[in-house]
Amino acid sequence: MIGIVDYGLGNIRAFLNIYKTLNIPAAAVRTAEELANADRVILPGVGSFDWAMECLNASGMRDMLDELVSRKKRPVLGVCVGMQMLARRSEEGRLPGLGWIPADVRRFDESGFTQQTHLPHMGWNDVAPNATDSLFRGIEYPRFYFLHSYYCALDNDEHILATTDYNGKFVSSVCADHVFGAQFHPEKSHHWGVQLLKNFAEL
Image (tube, rainbow, N blue to C red; front, side, top):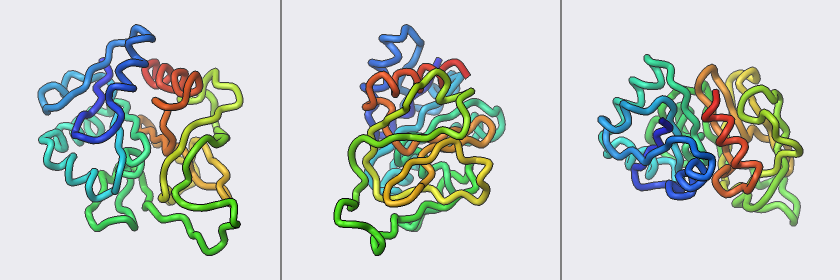
């Protein structure tokens, strides 16, 4: 069962609808006890970094998340702010992140932006995978929906799963063993997103 962490943020219903269409068991989890039964975990997120971390910490699921991901090595997919939460910290706030990916979250540098480039980075954009044997398996010409002003700056390039160009390349998907992240919104990205979520379920 895929547990979608419902801590008050994210497009929970959209994920559930996709997995229902795919006939893949998934459920919104709101307690540590419910989360403990998940074979895979999706951590969605919208809004600011600190607000998301505060909501997660107050949900009562933080310790169980650490248990499942850090000790039991269950696959996890962070989406949008959920991907940024996988990092150690963010320039957007003061609270520490989950620290599952060796990275810091930084704001795009607007000083070099052209008139056509502005924040937030919002809308459809191409995604260039470094590998096509996990999240991006079977996805041709991947194109996803974005809405963000911050990105993950990784310590090690080996954790880059995909990049996207927005006045220069940035990391739009990460992978460190069983920990995955997508800066874009697969739940809003039509058939590309459906295939990516299906791939995650089959890892």
